[in-house]
Length: 130
Image (tube, rainbow, N blue to C red; front, side, top):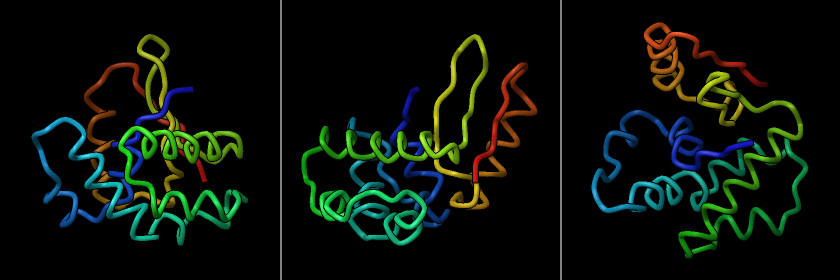
């Protein structure tokens, strides 16, 4: 199973916010997205009831400052969606698959963007989750 934390957070970010994300320094985009989705409590509000994860995890998501630990926490939430069989998987047999939040949590711009890419990439597919 492969997680992609930037994409995981990005698909849940409204378009006007996503367009303002930093485009330079490595890691800055992820931390910026993390602050808007995890630290803000938006992710917890949308997904905590579906995953049954302990309150301690949500507290840690909101308070963690270390970049690597933040990424690990998003990987943990990704794994929880996969374990519940409600994650969305994207990819193909050759390049592999990665897991994202369920489609119901995606912003419309992200769904449209993925649909556009799938029409252009031979053999790629998506298995929508919850």
